[in-house]
Image (cartoon, rainbow, N blue to C red):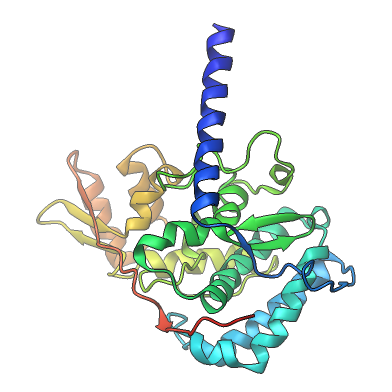
Length: 308
């Protein structure tokens, strides 16, 4: 029995290695803040202080180039701006950050902000990926943070989802292998992070800025706003049916093991009028669940690829 279990583990790890190797061959990783090729020496900074500095830099960018509702980014003007050049300098400081000094709340807020900033940085530096190229974009767009390199997928599925697998068919069974030192920085799974991460598509949640002090309130507000939008949750009592964002489909297991578990999660964040309808629906045995088509159109003005 033990040999069979070990054999299954070896086969799974071998398949994971093949998938990662294939992605690496098709689309090599690009580390957008790596200073090794420039020979730049970056001063070491305390993690908490650097997190605040990055937050401040991101906030300046958002205040100038993000729409009031958080749903549209002017990537073109942002990429050409002085503020973005300043952000590039700050992003290089990530190479010397020590994540071990951060609490879990600080780490979660830090990586939420870094993910959203890295998507924008990637769009400006590499160009906006087509629909077929999105898989590789998230697996190969990276920052060096401390001694390790993190792709967008590493941050989302490895760090923020507690080392889960991506929904992509080319993704490994877990993001980090058992020997990966980045495992030490994984956060406990909090399903609300799905409403804070912004992939640059129109169906994504609005962009917000997070800190350890506002994290709980911020994630609750983000989840409430997402669940109460008719673009993400719609209910029909006559048809005993709910329509949901594809995010609830792709990450269904993060919300529970059944559709009922998922709807109970959503119920905790709904406004009273919609909640009363969902309660009636949940009293029925038969509930139909379907999902909206995801709008992958860019959430802003398309940037020209820059040579950064």
